[in-house]
Length: 484
Ligand SMILES: Cc1ncc(COP(=O)(O)O)c(C=O)c1O
Image (tube, rainbow, N blue to C red; front, side, top):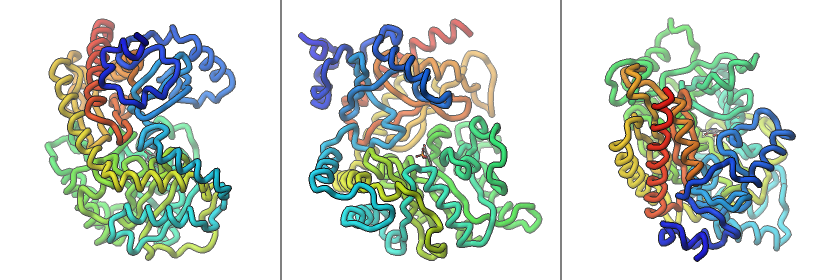
């Protein structure tokens, strides 16, 4: 019997795993990251040559060699479930056939790889497919701007677009929001960690309270629909003594991702749409992380039945390769030629893989699979919550799931709920890693464990992942409560 067959969950593993070679350890088996000599050597070399700003290798100390479907394999032959999916960019799982075929076709036919913003049949097909995915009412009046291939650059383009179209100077964003790491995008970020040492960020950005219902952090009252936040925002925008000029745009995530997988209430989104319409302020929805099925709908704003003015898209849209665009109502198309540019906005390979991926998501209704698998995750995670003591909140939609870790034993409260427990959430992430499960961490005080698997995940895999997570939580609780 080989390692694969000996695994207790052998029956549940899909054929994807068979395409990985030289497996030494399967997900669900405990391993010690210090006993992974190849990964250790890579990490040491990486630390010598790469910037101190590197982040993931500090939390996930491995070097990767192969990846297929939901599985990653490191250089020591250890296999992991990937619930990080390239921070949400690998929608179909690693090396999906439609993505590989699109790359092969592009290469075999000697198609151009980079064309700046010169059009091609590949680009035209991509634009058509993006429009097919968008709500018809939006797509009918939409224009698209290709950006340098990062979500942050698409946010930069959007800031310029709305400033030029409205002639206004300021922006409004939300506490807990994340829009990227470039100067303008960083100015719109809630998290202070990354920005407080940076001088001269974009001025005239005002932050608004995002409804974080578990803790009602800003408001401090029971506020089911985020009505207190709406009252505050409406007052700010209509009071001629508010001290805050009307902004060029309001940007938000319908489910905050990096901020801790916090979904906005549907009524709140509808109210924001009403207010921005009444005040003639462009509503920008950042769907970089939520877009293309992840939330259980094609776009997360669709839960509220609203139509934004501008949508920012990246990650999944490139089908694993770099790609970012802004799609907007043509009434804002007032900027002149060259107002936004970037050499790699013509990345044809990303357009080919993007078209193949979006088509596959749409035709196979993967949003629906994300919704169903998300429900299963919730059920299983609630079972873990019932037998452990540190899970304060389980939230999200579809395959955008957050688990907020709290300290129920210290007796300290934050906004009426047990205090966040960063040490424990970090330990759980590590214990997951030691059992072959890669999950992300985020939110305030890094207290939220975030599940973001590829959209092709199946029920057996959800089951297996939640069992590994349960074992990791139990092990981490034992260690952290004993130390505290
Ligand atoms: C909602 C949102 N907007 C923008 C970005 C920035 O994208 P990128 O990292 O590609 O610049 C991210 C990245 O995580 C994101 O989650």
